[in-house]
Length: 285
Ligand code: ATP
Image (cartoon, rainbow, N blue to C red; front, side):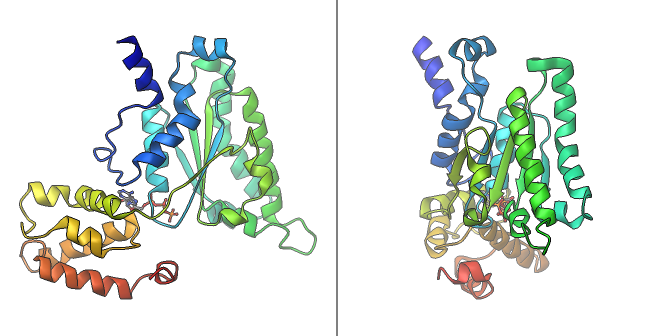
């Protein structure tokens, strides 16, 4: 029994589909082992082993593949406080000087709590979506003091400051890994990197199952709709696109007071959707 318990820590038996995440079992397991296993160890053991918790991770890959979904789920699993989510453009949109202040504020609650409660304080997760936007702005003004520069410097110094704190985890997300400055990816900063790619056929099947679960249990979807067949048709579709597809099929049916699609109707919709896809995905077709 002892062995089983320790295995459970290293490779917990997550029910990803119940969590609403399809096709990312391997990625999730790997992130957990590499970045979070130590967070569920008893604190005394962490101390004994001299383990440094991972302070930051970077999730990268195409849009709509579930990066935010994973980041939120990680927070829940680690019993963290409600994550603070900010996106790059949002930070930069504020006038110069206020941007660093925004970054500083993000960390303030966690820092305050750590001062008061030390290792007893709750885990604070700070999520930077579209992290690349900050770097795009770097050095973009002639003086070399672009807003991006100072925000990046502020972020770096905050990340370094976390060394003294055990209650902060930063999760960066980007579709443009190539834009992210090496300096941010070093050990002690966003040190664990995980690519979240487009789902394969089985992943698409799981995602379809997740987003049609209610319709199927409530019997509002024709039984001839074959999710496996749809998954095969939806090559290179992201999770968000699959969700969007299910939603539009639903409202179509709702407006006509009919069940959600027959297989023939739905297949036709898949083809229509393909035409309207964004440039990123068009390039893959
Ligand atoms: P972006 O890079 O555009 O921020 P992202 O990778 O963070 O995208 P999410 O915001 O997590 O993508 O995905 C958008 C929505 O699409 C999710 O809320 C979810 O409903 C659906 N979705 C995406 N990927 C998956 C998945 N793997 N399983 C289930 N649903 C998914």
